Image (cartoon, rainbow, N blue to C red; front, side, top):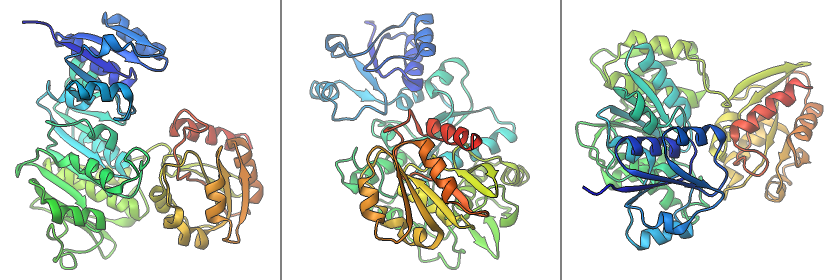
Length: 454
């Protein structure tokens, strides 16, 4: 049999993992990256005898592929991708490729907000339960690399819309959709429905034996579920009790809040945990806790283990992460808030007068979603980006103190000067980080260092 040629575009965590798995499964593998491949990934490719190039793509070495694994960051509109599509070359994601070679149960999480916290919480529960579980997707290690070297019985996978774009035969045993609000519209032709369709790909190929967990009070999800009627067994969750949610399209909530208790009812013995005992506070985290607990119950995890995790889970870096209190001013790192809805949740949880730092690479944002909370909770806005014109135009008439900067150091210094004792300085940018930083993690790390330097 002729050896198939696998071309991997992009040599980050996912691409390198896909290349190594492909090599081990007998493919002729070639890796190409438009940028510079980081030294650790170069070393991994060399160690496995995989040919690679960086600093550009050699078309003749790519267009002869039998199949292409594409990095999620490469848009479908890229000329080389369009050439591959025109000649009929299959283009898939690393997750799709890796799933061919494992029989593990797949617990997959997507949504505009809450997916990283929910993914991490589910992993924590399963790990505490003693299951052989891996963490993959947007967080954790490459799924393909784990399948190649340490295949697990369960994988908890955070999926972005970009990853879902190139998934076709993949099947999630448990699919979780937290919510859908406008995000990445620049990637989807500024058409919100295109983004919605990408998110709902998480339900494709599911059968009645699978589970679809979703927030029943999100109007976008409610509308789409009525329209498409997913094939999986539905497990809605929300703040409304079963009686209050009885007329919902997907049926009554399987997890809800009742008299300040979180109730989860996907197994014969319901779980109840007082909201005040949850390690993750705020309404958004109640939703995250519901979704994670439902997944765990569906997997027959004991309620005692779920309760322990809900009460002890440490949280996710860069998501409402406490940094320090400096001369009575509390600093919170929410650098992971790369869209407006994430910032809404952060502001909603603020209990003290707030100085809000926002700005970065705008993705077609509509800031009006946070208008009311900004007026209620903020006395100062600090803009931090290379292009703050849209922010100035939107918030300029609010009558708030506005500090305009183009770097993080000045933003932190300005916020600290504007804050009063007892205030909170919140970094919750609403925007992507790529104007000034390598990633939202880099932005958060630099923010925390700047705070410590005050």
